[in-house]
Image (cartoon, rainbow, N blue to C red; front, side, top):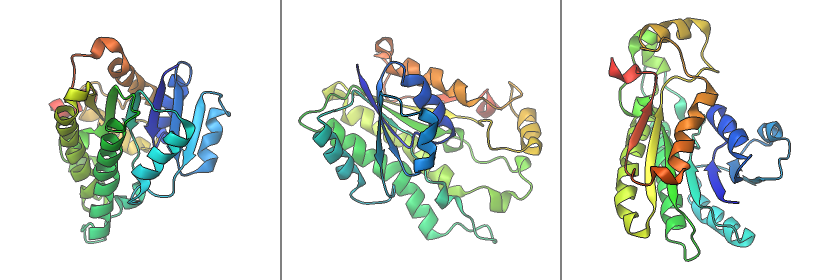
Length: 246
């Protein structure tokens, strides 16, 4: 059975994907909140790894050491972790330097370090890397969706997600001679956290007139994991109901 390493797989999107892929893969899962693991019901294919912080400078090395101790090296890496602690904005609309830097570390530096070190490990089995980004790495926030756009739209998230998309392209080139394919998926608005007022506004500016369901995030990941997607690398696949078309 092949193995997928998923960072941050206990969020809205992660939980849906982990539940689905546990049926056919071993899942190495990084997490911080013990309570969120309960939804997986101690599945025999789940190997959880508790981490302290995405901005820990030794995190990638610690994960590699954990894999060495397990003697398990995944065929697939999905960089999904995102720490919403750094979503904060000051009352004047300014994002602090701490939030700007730490979102970048979590969404760009850590995925880069883990991808590079895993790909270049002497025992690597890595075939594919998938980075999970956002439509906000492509377009800025639409102020018409928010009551107070200045204080509700963290620029640091968009900037780091934009950089994550370019990281995908860089890694695709730098790892091509190792036969490792690197792609990105940028999702649009996902149902689960937004209130009814936001959803109504979102429907008006999205061609498919609805937010996507967490389960709808699975198919693009599954496609990129399959062997028949082997001629695709360095791409950012946008799954947003047409939101960024308008």
